[in-house]
Length: 142
Image 1 (tube, one colour):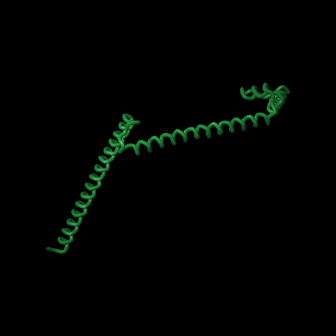
Image 2: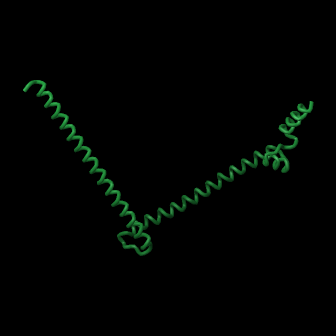
Image 3: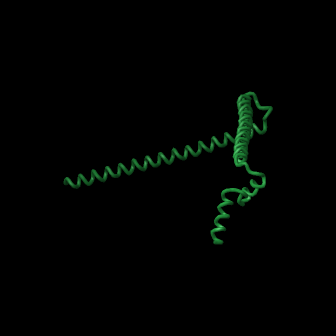
């Protein structure tokens, strides 16, 4: 057998070995993914069983489950408490924003009529914008 024949056989054997190892690794990964998927299915089923049990036995659970149910009830109470705090914070934020708006409007020192005109998109009588409009109209007339 010549040197090139040996070299060719070695390269072929090495390539076949790499292909076999890659296939083996791919099979391992694929099987591990399938196992993980089935474990997720099992966990989802356990979760569904637990939720259904709590729905069916909120006050008459077996002693072995009472600790878990107590934890659930306590967490639900905390969630309700946190939601109330969030509502209060939102109300405070809205109140602060409203106060800021009122202060800005008061700083403008406008009459209710002027404020209404400004908010409706019109010009405010006696304002700088109104004076500029008059000047522009006068320049067209000249």
